[in-house]
Length: 389
Image: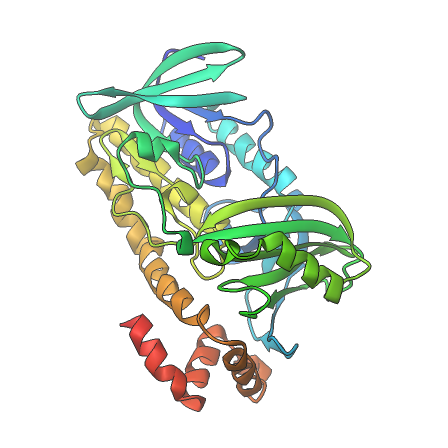
């Protein structure tokens, strides 16, 4: 490890690896620091991605894919299955292969990578980020950089150290629990999403197959709801009812920021990407691809900013503008939809499912379901207006 780099990326997840890769491709020196001893572990993710979004950033390596997905099933509280028509393909990843694969791409582009490297502070000079303090192999180092990219996840201490507000309201922080289990006998090319304000308040349950009866089965509920009953309690009740033969192999828990974006995601010498910048779909909680897209943009902007010799907040704000154009506007809409969908009662959800089942399957889309529910159930219109205006 040298004592100076053009760009330091804190965090070796998908968004961090993409930021490092695209910055390195611009010809600047890049160091990526990962606190865990192995990139990709532990896996705290349902592992679902869309083909189109993933291909917009990288070429897909077949070794990353556990299961191809062609069907989406929405299950109402009463058990009605609504199959959504879609031409898009999705995947359930093997993150143990995927994350290291992305890090390898960053390394091939010229990035240096150090694992078990714990960043415990920023270097600041006259209100500008100028590097990091890092502990690795029992020693403390100070490493200078013109730009630091914080890809350090939902906690984002890097953002807080730079004075960016990264904390969220309890209601906007999804509390998640998941098991990977065998003997989950469901359609293997379909993801199954279960909605019920009784069994998953202000959230949903999911089953993401990984082939041969293996699946990720999980739940995400609002932090407010989890104060009254833990997500694991809801999850184990769901497993007992729906998959009593399930053999649990792994168990994980974590938080997902299903929130509005921070007012700022850049500062002098600093950029935030991925969960650190709240670049997560507020409805689904999915953030792999959006984080990778943000990482790509941030890496490209960082590389050019280094070449131009301008790394102040005004220059780095180009990243924020490009992110808004690519994904940010959709993020705002999804946040408003989340507020509407997650406040629907179980009766509202069942009534919407009944309506949806009357629509030909090839015409069913999420947007069409939303429109039809409002037309057929006028009582929801006022609630939608309150949220969406």
